[in-house]
Amino acid sequence: MDKQIICRLRDINRAISELEHHFLQKFELNINEAMLLCTLKEKSKLSSSAVAEALGITTSNASKVIASAEKKNLISRNLCKEDKRQMFFSLTTMGKEKIETLHHEKIALPDILKEIV
Image 1: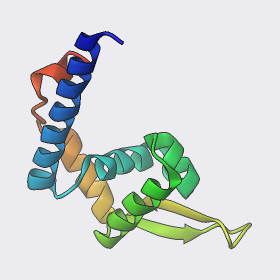
Image 2: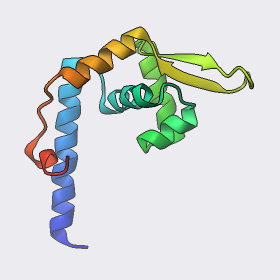
Image 3: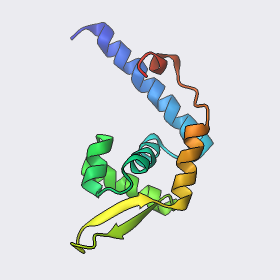
Image 4: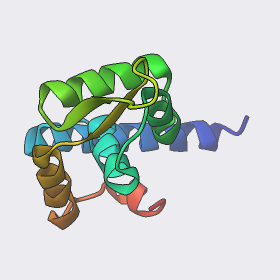
């Protein structure tokens, strides 16, 4: 593998970590929680497995992200009407307000991420 690629990936990873630190300080959200809110705004309701797929994370990590967002009252858990074993997640009013804040806020991306976005 090309050494330059590894170094570039290291720099991208570091930039994402810096961005996540910024998110935690400014919005009290980590990147996965922010992506969950964005996804639920677009899809309105999703199962935990659909959340995992949409965010590109494992179902175990999705469960952690969901639990954290629920604890912050940003999403709610709803039983499926047809199958009571199935859960769906959707934005709460507070979650809708938080994602709107994120959409209207100027988020400073590290330079290396500006090249990608």
